[in-house]
Image 1: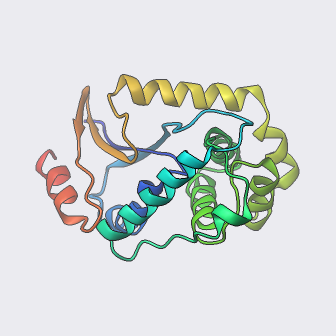
Image 2: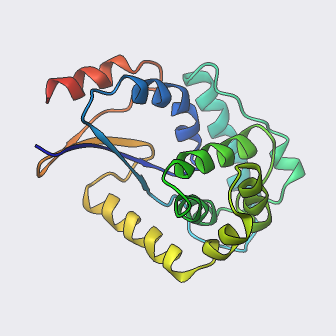
Length: 205
């Protein structure tokens, strides 16, 4: 029996950031034999256009909503004055793929580096310069990372993962699902407690 837990995310998704502590707890307690498959859903495609003020206001209010719904989630609102926001998360997604090419462990390491930089340090992961800095801070081969970041194969891999998530019907970020043989079983995300998710997972094993 082939069983894996599919996790769909975007490194610049604020709900994924809010889920981070419980996600880590979930992985620590996953039953033996379940393989984790991380897929990038690609929240917002590439654009060079600055984020309009109306969208800036919307996202900032969204952050405040998350803080009220998931206590303990931190955001550094200095981002909105120190950076030039763009509604583009695909560069950060490609950065995760480029990091992954240097070892599977770098997938999550780069994701967390992007989240930390964006939400706590008011740095802009839509910019290649920021992503390359984060690669160096994550002990990656920076020269190789910079090359892979703009490699067409990296873009193709992102498109493949986006298509896969849509085929599976996992279009919200974050999303979890058990892939049990040929069945895809959604696991509702709980932002405060990993136990309900573990109960569902264990119930199908």
